[in-house]
Amino acid sequence: QNKFGVDLGKQQPAETAAWYSPAMYNIVRQNGEDVHIVIKPDKDCVVNSGLGSVRGARMAEMSYSRARNTELQRLTDPIVWRYGQMQPTSWDDALDLVARVTVAVINDMGEDAVFVSAFDHGGAGGGYENTWGTG
Image (tube, rainbow, N blue to C red; front, side, top):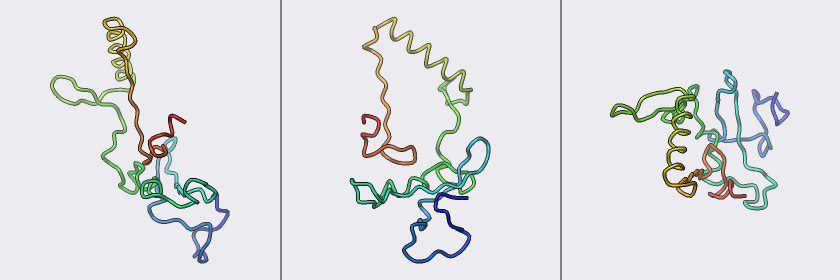
């Protein structure tokens, strides 16, 4: 079962819509199970005429995958600086720490002192030329 509606276990004809490069394929974990993904450029996209950019065409390859050993340096669990070194912690602890620090900054310097910077340049996490989130 796949979006292409063809048996990808068999050789595909030339110029098929089901073609994808190795960089467009990966195996990721979702809900505890391995899932095969293919991320392809949108052939109807007016911005790039359906072509893949150097970053965009590698989004699948740049996804974290133990099955294919890609992007293993990415964090999968939070770590915090404690006792002079980075240490693993729980999500509850990490979120509690962020909340306590945020409240302390607001209480000491006001709401204008809080600034959140989030950035995605288009790799693996989505994004489009640094502006996707600003829409």
